[in-house]
Image: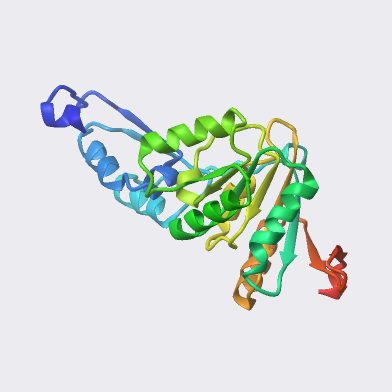
Length: 253
């Protein structure tokens, strides 16, 4: 937008505009900048919106700036689906979450993990609790300056951090291939967030694991809807009387 203010950029001859990862761009608060740029292209003939998910904001852009758009959906074939073992872990209280997460980290010998929280406050709190227990981790969310986020990502990629505690918006677009496990510390509020979250693991034909912590009835219903609409195979885990994790058969839930 600086070029617009200085009048050093002319877009009157541009005919085609492409918005890649449109949902992420709009989620991160760039909708005003995007619309201003589109308004600067008076002779635009083609507008392509590429997005892993179609959010309300993407639909708004389409409605205003596209005319009779053609929607093309590319569905992955089963052979191309990431190898991600998904678990739903049912807990009795929120207080169990931290200890269970630490036990899973130790038991699975995971070297690189991402834990997702729904809010910035929860991400900060979880990162603090893990750090107090000698687990190398840092939070990443929209409330942290960009340079600090970049330093944190660099440390995570270099293996200096075992756990990255992230919110959904901050983690969108992360390009890290060797994440061993994803923890949904909070059940995502939107189904599309679940897809993006677990997609951080199981990349480059590696095996990945994803755990979702379910505590309340509301979270259980949310998770049921995710499984139903996304057609995922999610196995349910519970603790038995001896405190050991056990696999729950479908007819037992």
